Every structure is written in structure tokens, then in C-alpha cells.
Image: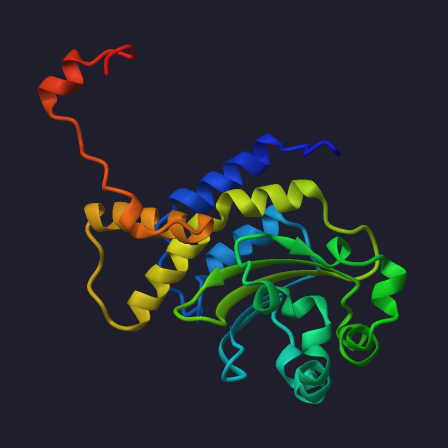
Length: 233
């Protein structure tokens, strides 16, 4: 297994993503400031955030970094994407039901095999996609996901370091998405206790656990805090 090569800068960036209460800055699904932090952590040529409702074949969110005319480019390619979707690596979350794994195109095929696929010939190559790593978040229903796609053109593929870092911060990204959704719905700000519960729900969604399997952590009383020791039950 290759070295993860996690730097102090990586750790600081992850902590910023995990701990910063990002303001609503107009991002449809996630704050733009958070997305910029992600591109600082996972180096890429483009970051696409796509809200995909596969059963209805519709989109509920669309963000790109850096800002581009991707939407216009995709308009002429949408039919090719839809035609080849189920035979491509893009459909893995829908075909398998696995939305917890962070996946790369290279998990499924070699570069040569990828270049021979109809999806690459008719869609990806026109958008400069040579390498991709994808993180999925649940978005309220079967087949409805928020997908973060980190794209590289020519050059090296993504690594196990990139996969590991995205896996670690995935629960925090889900919590940020839920917060953004609440803000756009005009809901009141969450209390500290509600934020604790939100992070538990996000963590359970990331691991597939049911909310019924956990209880909220209780804050220790002042007396307990003073008398407890590492060896106590």
C-alpha cells in the first residue's frame, strides 16, 4: 500500500473543514468557502458538485470550481451521458447501493480501458476528464445523492491519500450539506445540542448505521468531571 503522506497542512485543512461554521454564501448544496478548502486539500483541475436524482433523472444542485461554462458544455452532451450512464463507472452508486465508498475511475478499469468506453469517447474527453475521484452523500431518498467529483486532466491519477482524507471528512461534508439545506429553507439556526445530533446523524449516514442504534452523549456533571479518572467505569 502506498504511503498516505499526510502533511501538517492537510491536518489543518481537515480541521478547518470539520470545525468551521461556514456561513451561507450562496452555494446551492455546500458553501463555496468549504469547496475552496476542499480543493486546497485534494488538488484537482475541477471540482463538480452535482445533486442527482437518478429515478427522476433530474438535478437539484450544480456547483463548479473554478467557475466555468461547464453547464453550457454539458447541454450538448447530456444525451450521451444519459445513454451511456448505466454502463459507466458513474452509475456505481445506483447499481450497487454503495454511497459510502469514495471511488476512483481506476478502481474499475485501466486508463486504456477507460479510453475505450463509450462514456469517455462521447462525454468525458470533451470535458477534459482523464482521472476522477467521487464522494457521494445521501440527499433524501433512494437514488438521490449529492456527488462531489474531483477531476484531473492529463497528469497523475488520484491516490489512496486522497481517498483516505475524503473518507475521513465525509461525515462533516454531510453535516455541512444538511446545514446548507436548512439555511436555504429559512430554518432557525441550530443550537449547540442540535449540532451534536446533526453530526451523529451525518456520521451514521456515512457508515450505514441506523439512528435507532445510538444515544446522544450526555455531558458529564461538574461532580463527575472532577472525580472521574481514566480507569473508572
